[in-house]
Image (cartoon, rainbow, N blue to C red; front, side):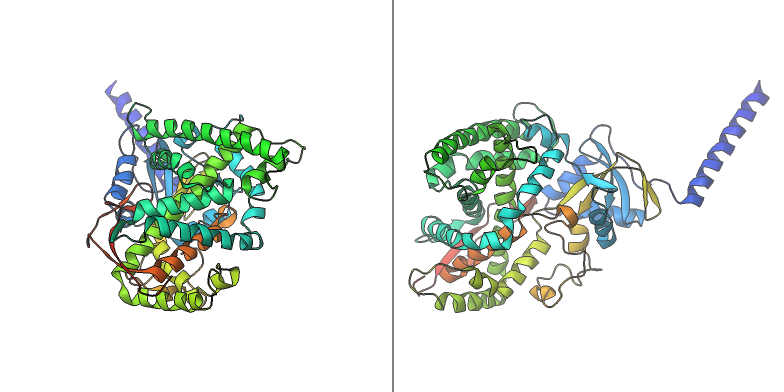
Length: 476
């Protein structure tokens, strides 16, 4: 009996050795890493580094620990591999819909339940076919004046005649107002305010641990989504009436475009389906830009020499305008240094921290096997905060974006490949128009010099970034 036991142990050891030898020779073992706690995996560590203001720590700690730019983990209920660096970005962006496809946590499908029986992924594909016509530069040119008009109203109501303001709530109000106007033709500030707060609740609970219990961020996000959808359906029904009576234009905004555009089978979208699409657009169209605008204020307040160059550039444009003359597309193209500053802000505080993909089949990357069905996460910070790609990465240096700019696949605030943010040019417009009116009106200083930054899931100042305003003496 003892001999049989020893024999079985020897056979077992031999088989394990062969398996390990095979893996080492083929280079097809799983990436190094650990999956953490049961159910939760490493999700709490992943999220808590963001809550502490340093989401890159989760990435860089593991890259250093495993000496690998790919590592395995367990995030938001899924086995996952994290791809780091420019080579990881290039691989994922170049293999979209070949080896990988977009993936969202189940929490997203629950917060955005489609009225059709399709997934968020399929809905996103439909959306991407529809959006280019609205977001291409030629189409956006006609909205510069509208953006300028709304921005002037925003600064008049929220900033002027005040000694100090809290910036982040104001930038959220600004980008949401713009999105409501350009997507829905909703311009009345009271109407906009009615569902601005639920949007904040929805955004903060969107990428959270999917525990649907009263009081959790996830539960509050689901309730907010239901409220907003009802409000959107009400707006959609009224627009149908207005279009029928000739009170609304077929080209005035995305809502009219959706109501009047059929698919390849001649079928029009239903009200709930359109509400789903607009809901997603409003989240993407205002939430990330509001973070970017707030951090522009933060860095301009901290760096007077950068502020001065932005001010000089913007005042040259302001002085070229006649009384009451709105900004035009040509003015936006002159804001080159201002956009370099905005890009450096997007590098240091990317609103989009990263995104998930799903492996469509087994494949090998960097000598490691990635099984079909595994989730893959790419992180903007893995390149943005790396000295390999951006020397002295914590230094604020807009000159990084002069000439040909950063190397390909290193600066990725809008993603990349087929899934690059379709609203990139729209975001550029709203950020630059905001910068123009900000520096034209004020100098400013931070009231809390060392205010903490929280990332949840986007970077936000812990106290909302209160600043003291010093109006310029010239008339805006």
